[in-house]
Image 1 (cartoon, rainbow, N blue to C red):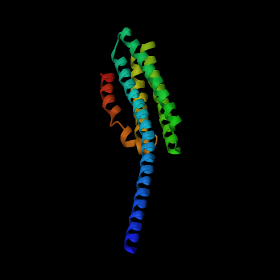
Image 2: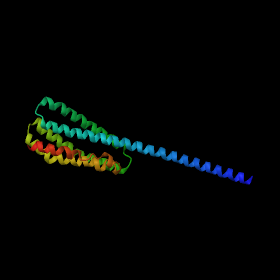
Image 3: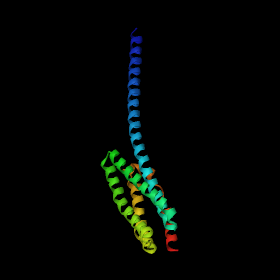
Image 4: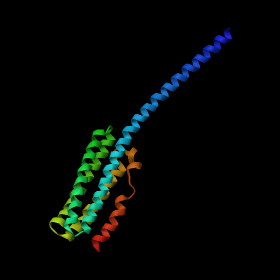
Length: 187
């Protein structure tokens, strides 16, 4: 009888420990899903903003290659829409930022975005409105291209903390586009 009672107590303890272990694993799983869900959402927003930026780079290059105003105007309209979407996505990321590192990373993105946007808008103004092709090309080569590299690097190396780096960095996106663009400008 003592043996049966001891065995029953041992089984009850094992069942209790098993239940506590499974309960704790369930809590850990729920926490992990919550954290991953939030980070995945931020990652998606960051990649979407970077994709719009890459589209704007292509649109700007197309505008430099075209001469027909009828073809240029829709591209400029699309570029403006993309720029607005990027701004909205950056605001969304700011609202979702949890840590000081994420806020610092977004500040770096915003800080590098401002000179890039200003320089490509100036280049487009020189090209489209003032018809100063050489001046526009000079701005693109001397200001906009380096600013684009810094802006995309800010997304890639500091995208809302180093935890996102390996996912948000699009390897050499600007580096693939801009050498061809530079060649076309100087031909």
